[in-house]
Picture (cartoon, rainbow, N blue to C red):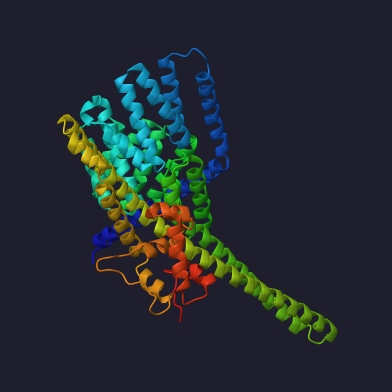
Length: 553
């Protein structure tokens, strides 16, 4: 090999080492920056009451102005609107109160734009707090064609968020697709200068893996808003989500931290950044930080009364539990080390009989205490497991029934509206005899009751598919309940199905089944008399159906 070739190779190697050094240096700088931001965030969490106090002072001043006498309708509207804005992502219940007042004030003003804006804000707040039926009522009552042009993007954005939240609550993924259509409608308006357009476009690109295309736009938005703006927090969060899609964990973490800092500065309690940080640190095994940010997110959700966020937070409770379990294991490790040291000390002092005897007694007492502690811990663990099982079952029942409840409510609203329209047509056609016959007939009520009972039976048996079999196993042979063809449950079984769901009040049972109180008592007495188990234990065993095997054998 010639001298010039060797020189060229050495030059390339030096260049390669230089590049590696630069990359390592940049990575170290990035980690130092992230650590510095984490320290700042921890400081702000411990001092966030100072920011909340400033927020409260501003709110108190606005309330004082609102309490002044002789305010014009316009002044009331402006103050109600200002208080709604201040409370919007701070305390949702209070924001709803002032949004409702603002709706009433704008009606008096006869200001179409102000009224629609206040009404849309109320729908958005209902969505935040989990009042899905009320939110959908407002949104369906508004036609996009009747809105001022500048409010149409907000209308589509609220519809988009509503269906996203509703999909999460009901666990029906199809609602995400409906929400995406409203987001597409917003983007079709091509209001490219608005924040809603930019953030919706960013969300769409992130979800369709066009991340590298949207990151430059997000960074320009961050510079445009400045770190003290509430919009900065939302944009920084979206930037963190974008980096998560390309698996850049350091930058993802950095922008979540920047979002959390901006949320604290602006007293934004309805946020996502703390949850995302908690999940990241939990996955990386940093349980102390994960627990800290989980607690911060939980405190914000409770303070803000955002039921949707509290529902989301339920999955992060495992972070705290895991943290405590790790600490417990460390404590056990320390105890084992202490026991080893005591054993070594006993061996060294074996020649001194009296001293060894005292040490032995001391060691025996320590072991007894440790054994008692372990037994107590085992009992506590058993209780905790039982509670977790009950909570899991309760959550499953709650989630199933909430989703079905909204579907049933929506269906019945449509049916009532259709019935109203048919009555209106009869009145318009002056078909009073037919109208009277329809109003006199109870067939609709009976049909709806049959439909309601059928849906109840289907939902209940989906939750407890072995209920009928397990129930009959508690009855004496020959006294067991036999269902008719295509019958899911009968009235006797429904009484105990309601009991299994926790409805023990006979008045409520009788009201639901449309029968007298004495009928409910007679059915229950008859069933208990046919029980193959002690009567006092019969209802307790009913409550165990679906949790473990139930049988009178």
